[in-house]
Amino acid sequence: EVQLVESGGGLVKPGGSLRLSCAASGFTFSNAWMSWVRQTPGKGLEWVGRIRSSGYGGTADYGAPVKGRFTISRDDSKNTLYLQMNSLKTEDSAIYYCTSDVSTPGAWDIWGQGTMVTVSS
Amino acid sequence: QSALTQPPSVSGSPGQSVTISCTGSSSDVGSSNRVSWYQQPPGTAPKLMIYEVNKRPSGVPDRFSGSKSGNTASLTISGLQSEDEADYYCTSFTSSSTWVFGGGTKLTVL
Image (cartoon, rainbow over all chains, first blue to last red; front, side, top):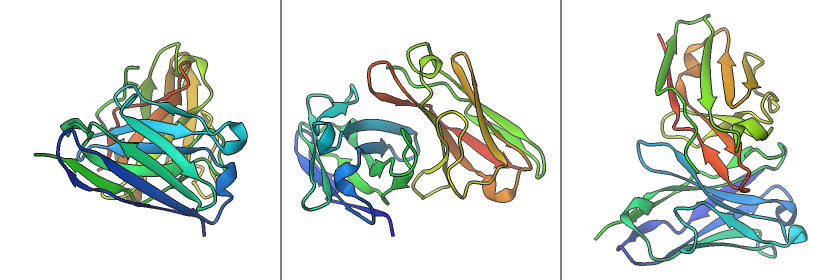
């Protein structure tokens, strides 16, 4: 079964840091381009960033609101995706989803259940 | 990159058809075939319904169809059913190698 499971969410103070993880199974993770998408409770979806597969350099792109503060990385030996979030702001509070385009080019056909991040003093 | 523009809400009766629009610019919808649509019932993760403007993933009913004209993409749901009630989001790849979402549309089945 194709599956993504996020973890690492929680409560953090403004200016703090948090690292999210996403464990993948059921597909060839090392070939997958992975993305993070977030959703503020009661509001819409926002693309956070993506990381290319190692075969394409493993480089990452980011959305403007998080560029310079967030870093996406991957460990193909552990089938795990990471999101390191630094200098957190209250507006970063959201559900963070891990997602990928396993069977549908350029569109996210598999999603995790999401992990909640709350940034508050 | 500004969000794509969707109507906040649409509604229709069972059996009817509804269309949700998604308006962007020449830097995203107008220049990309990577336009997708997602369905999100309350409390669940998004589900891919349409990709590459008009393709349906396996398992998505053919009642769902997508199209694009210029800078505007559209999702049409025909033969509305109660289970179609959800939030719908469009997204597009951009000329800056980023992705942008629409603000979402709440579909109510009357």
